[in-house]
Length: 266
Image 1 (tube, rainbow, N blue to C red):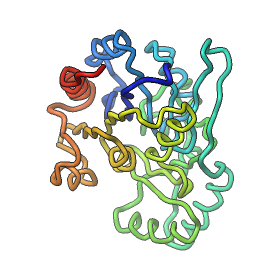
Image 2 (cartoon, rainbow, N blue to C red):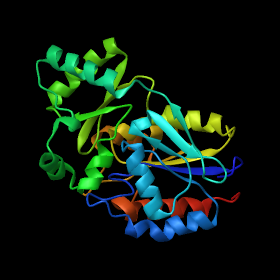
Image 3 (cartoon, rainbow, N blue to C red):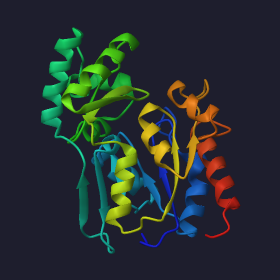
Image 4 (tube, helix red, strand yellow):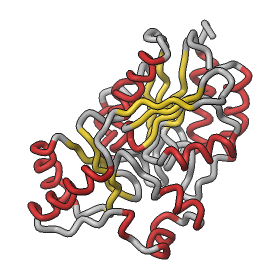
């Protein structure tokens, strides 16, 4: 990855580049085009490092990646022989203790993903046994089952006193350090690679993508089958975010190619 890249594609995975079956096939042509143009594609996801390493290997990606909702950034040196990391957040152990305390305060049992059985995780995610193993290899965030909306609002208030925050994803909610979010992770990556002037083209679909979309130079919301996420609607209405014309990889591909075709300084 060149330190002098003018544009980065920074993208969420689940619900954005991937559909509910983890399919990205409608975007493969666009991914190949981006590779030909030497435009980096940087996954920025709630997934673990183990999950993203596997995803990158399966799809021929070599650029840095952001995991656990912005809690850590990983990349490789020029010959891909040595991986480096930037850590923004609290440890899983510390966050799990905080989640337990919050659970007591709001008087509602918050169930971490790691406490579910193999079958329960499969029912929730559809992941294979190896996929589940990679998903549970967490170090900097704690995913837990989505609580009712009124409980979620109370959790957000309690989080303030613990210097943590919570995001609601498509399948789960995520607890992480107040210093950890996708926008800050991209900023840390820019500083690390000494490329503070690079333009960020960001794509996301849910609440946990909001910090990334707000940080980006060009922000694209990928809708679900029932339209865009309610937490992102305000940004769309204000004209801050563009809305893709189709869900998942198809909308991702259409939006990215439209932007690339409009850029004159690639």
